Image (cartoon, rainbow, N blue to C red; front, side, top):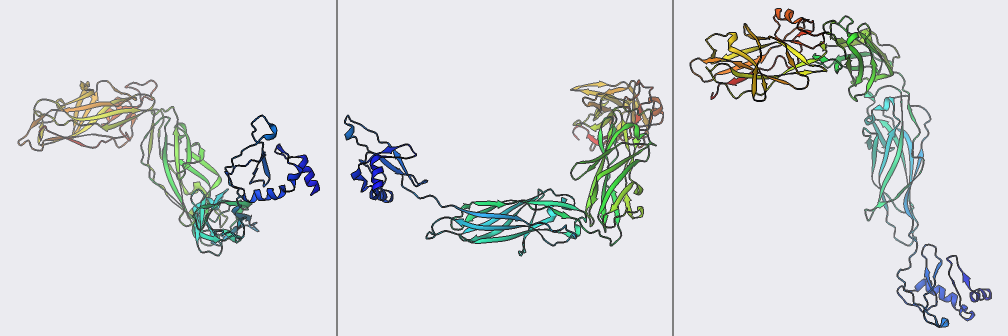
Length: 597
């Protein structure tokens, strides 16, 4: 006590940098005062002490503030300090501690079944540092979050996997992104209680799961808890290793049954394609039975161009139609394009299907007058190399069932298309040719195209042609520009029900915008005018022909046009084509009625 009195009389300096002095006489009662001050000093109370002391709740040590002084007499200095905070003890620590222990995989998974494979042991404890005499509400552990990553092979379909708590019948499905939430439905934990959860993964439908190798890992991403009485979030601390050991599937080959591999196609209708264009021209769907399959090689062949396809198809790509991903790219050599797949394409047994589309990209330079630019693609059984995973053997051709029904495609330098335009509200009778049908012709590609012949089917209802019989003078072809109409020079001819127009000069059709035309027809009344109408459509051709304009006209083709692939192009060049596969031909028949009828 003497030593204490000495130092109190001499003065104390604290790490906060403030110093105060009291007399030796005061030192005797100072310890009692200090203890009483800590326990019961009331805030907002004023003190005449020369120096004020405030209790620091975090460090539990005195903090000193030098008083403000006033007046001339230093010995009579006093101070007044106003305290505004109530003294509080440190807040207790409280949380759920989640200890994550990955389970070391002792071996690969050899059999594809629904047996759970343990990946984690999760230990939970409710920690709260409050006094034992205080009421501590229980905590509800509600949800656990996990995510798969690094999945390959057998585990490619994440939705076929389930996460379970061993000993519990409830299963939780992974979504397509590999995420899953386990709902614990409020597992209750009082302070000091612990909970252990063995977490396992399993295959949901082994019968439709490919019997092929694969790997995956699982990450524990978090937990959610709440206070039982307040429904407030409760913190969760994760310790340990939240990433599982790698799970390796190395299934035993299946050798029962006969391996059967089938392929069919979704029909893509043939059409005309322009130079430089890319288009899907073959679509196949592969299925495996009795065994899982691995496709090693596919060869696509052309059946009609006699190898000419090599010159106008720049490349051909195999595309997974489920994802749009390009699986491989090839080129035609002697009419055949071979695809080698690495890694091999897996097709699971039991009804799973693999749809593959084949897309061609055409060369920029097309000479339709020089080579046959038609092609039709197919896949023969012997051109598909596939291996059974279970048997480990190549599937024989006899066990490959194919039904490829594909159509012919025609490649040209530029494309012409036809379409029906808006139709007139009606027409007059007995006043000469009246517009009875409107249509568009347009070019697609890098250059314009031209028209060398167009044919119509014209049918009258309740009317007759002017003069009582059909004749070339009953028709006119006009180009429509805004509200103006300009008559095209040329000759009409009649062949049965066909009305044929051959222009004097080829009619250029712009690639930049559609050109609008109108067919004008002269008619006269026959008896009752009720139901008077004209029906018109544009005719196409059923076969492809390429020659000069004059030669095609002599073969009675309905529609003749040029893709401007001739070098140079003229009416005598060999780049004139028939109306086979012209988009829009034949057009739908339109009906225009007489005014007021």
